[in-house]
Amino acid sequence: MTVFEIEPRTALAAAKTASKRSLTVLNPAPAIYLKPEELDGIYAITPNESEIKIMAGLSPDSQVDIATLAKNFSKHVKVVAVTLGERGVLVIADGKERLIPALNVNPIDTTGAGDAWNAAFSIFLAEGNDPFYSAEMANRAAAFLVSRKRGKPDLVDNLPYRNEI
Image (cartoon, rainbow, N blue to C red):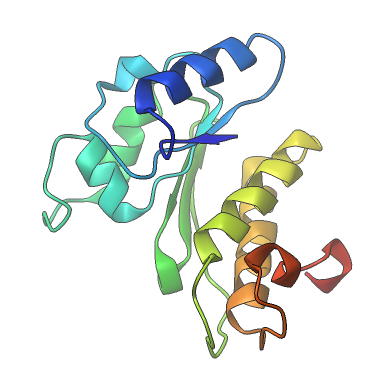
């Protein structure tokens, strides 16, 4: 898994190189404009709804159909998972489209929810699970994190263990 918190072209090159030997997940945050074909060879992308708009060259507040944007990118990657916050995640994979609903929780602190989601999604995919199940488990991991009273200062120390999701 890689992110655009390093130079985006470096992250893309790393993901494409890694894809020759393993499954690759790109979390395009912070987002930049990308031609969909620039993602060829990457297994999965995990933008949020603002990021997929930016990737398509649109303003983050544009009123567009997220599924249409996701389908366009899905022509170049095997899995598109657009996180939609409290509405869940839209997953397009293997020609199927499914909205995986978020769990209903009382959030205490949403810091790191996307990181927890991406980590869990990547782990479950790497273990050979299908993208829809992987997204369900990632939703659980993020829900657990945001609803947990955090007793430790470091985010990593507050991430859920498998048996907690």
